[in-house]
Length: 214
Length: 296
Figure 1 (spheres, helix red, strand yellow):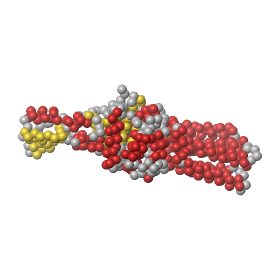
Figure 2 (cartoon, one colour):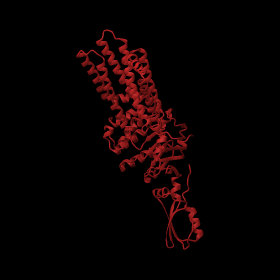
Figure 3 (tube, chains in turn orange, purple):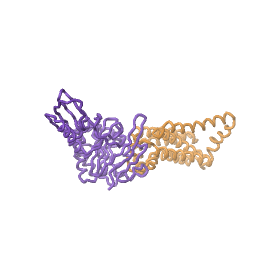
Figure 4 (cartoon, chains in turn orange, purple):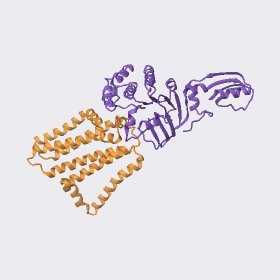
């Protein structure tokens, strides 16, 4: 597993450095222009992260990396962990960058800000997992059924949310979820748990694939 | 001693194709040529064996170990050259080999370098800059450098020039010298495998139609010409025949049995000649009606 992580990191180091470099530049610009807020560097680094990881994922898919890994003497679990490494480590690096930014720009680091950062990182990771799971379902036992369950679940959540919003009940809930809870330790834990759940689901879907030809 | 590989009741179904049920095994020290037309299921069989595709059902063992994708110890014994060759495209051949070497304790950099020299392959070039043939050479080196006990070769010479093909044959011969390795070699080009193979398995429409020792095949299959004035005869073990007046030309899958019958019938001007493995394969895969079938 470590060999895969090392190889991927080495292979994509320029893309990662470039992506991370954009985040650093944005943080410096934000600091130098006295914007002071954290939202700008966070938003910019989220864009940079998504673009970088998207390009890397597209490239790995084009080069049929899963097929290369599948014949190696590694368990599917190790391969599944290995292929997630860059997405996780890059997000972690960005999180550390934000912490440094906070330490430089603030005398005291407020807890809600850290919770916000954690929640945002967790949701960003969950979104990457969402695409990875979508990709792997395509190689599953029953593609139609897999997509049906996967998107059916999210569609159900959205439908219930929409209904509750329509009947005025969810407005308070959504405001709590995305404004209040987002900046609370409980929210950071909740969103992290969601990201972890998506991570575990992505491992499971990968390990249940019927084919590793692509 | 366990078989190099053994699978039973292997089934893999796609919307437009069904492989199996197949049963096949291979003893160490043997080379099995896996022959079939395009789309017959050769690559699918090999994908299943190499762990790239999960079959719908059936059991597979490699040197006595189940090819469990979550317990990959069996993969140390396997070298696989697939129908397409995958690498880190932006890395040189050398760096790709270094990457692979980390996973195999038996990896020999010296042997890999020697093979590259024999194949006249520059390991300095990036994988994406290599021609189809050179990609195949790199894949072959990658599959051989950890001294696997079972080689799964899926049309490995596709794209190779004649010199590299001959070199590959020589390398495989040398590898087989210790009598412990086994090679499962798929192709639809018979002359390529006829020198190397001990046995041949013929696959058609996802089923094995015949498995036989190569020498038996060339010994038993003959083209026989003779003269006979009688009509409406059914010949023993004849897979195809042509008639012009009283002159017959038949292809027999059991030369001795056919000849016995012909002698009893009192035929004249009997002449016979051996067939090449290629000619025999064509007859088998055309579905000669008297081919002894090996139902798996």
